[in-house]
Image 1 (tube, rainbow, N blue to C red):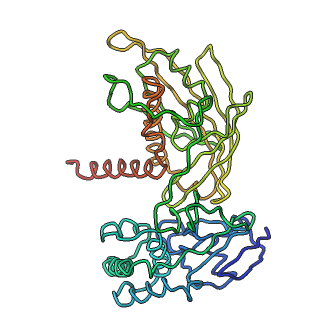
Image 2 (spheres, rainbow, N blue to C red):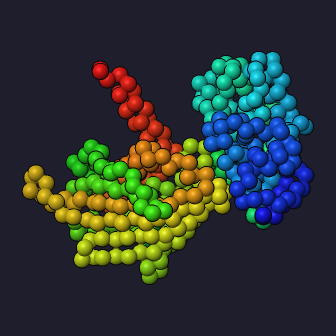
Length: 426
């Protein structure tokens, strides 16, 4: 059992819970706050939506132990909230509920949306609310209600409460007047205007103020680099998958880039290093957004180089305290010189990825989805490597691809493949 102390609806709470206790279960069974509903238990339907430190989150895939020191707000905690009162009234008038099971989570998500954004059209409201599912209404009344409240203007959009740091109970840093700035969490945050992206760290060895990025050299534009991915294999407690692609550059040039760990990290979506490697040690952070989960894995790794074989292995582990997920694994890549049809030297990059994943993110371990996701990440990496080799100062449009966009593309590929099989003549 683990002892936790948190604040729920402005009331201090202490309890002892098992490490695997869901926040939703804790709220319902321990505190009897049954307005938080449990639907899919996979973070998909949104019925369990609550606020954690002022940001909406899925309580069914959040462990209670990760909320130690946090401020939680459930639907019961909005009784005196003016904006929530407006939404409740609009939901009733627009017939935006039938069975009511999705309604608590729908109201919390709608309130978060109205506070963050304004002036959305009906299509945009549907898109913003697509993370909350309803099996009764067809969403017309829900969109009507949100549109009605959103049209009420700033007077309806109550000021967001001062958020507190989850770990230390200290106020969050302020920026831009009274706006609360937050880089983490499942939503862009409770402010009405979009939050600017955090500044990217300058690459090692460059000045703090980098020159304007250049486009790739003229005449070198090529189509997407094809990435092949083998089947996912289970080797002991680790899952392992192999992929390969060919870069139209000499092996020596590719090796110089890929053996330069900070330069390689710039080409990898979501990866940021804490600094240059120290001997054979490196530390950094991997940001991942998969479906409803946003995770930030911080950890350390070990480098092993085999220059005579043009091979490098990076092994490490890390964890995300917010979701309770942990990951360990390795990336083993080897470069081979290949002659193209014109007699020029190109380079085949073969990568073996091994990993073990525990916690909420482990639900995305289905073989087909992982295979497509790895291919998408490999395509982004290959394109970025090619751009850097063509012009070291080139902009990397794919370097900031979020895990969610990669996941959506992978799911779209799977849907197209399924429809193709379904419509294929028999």
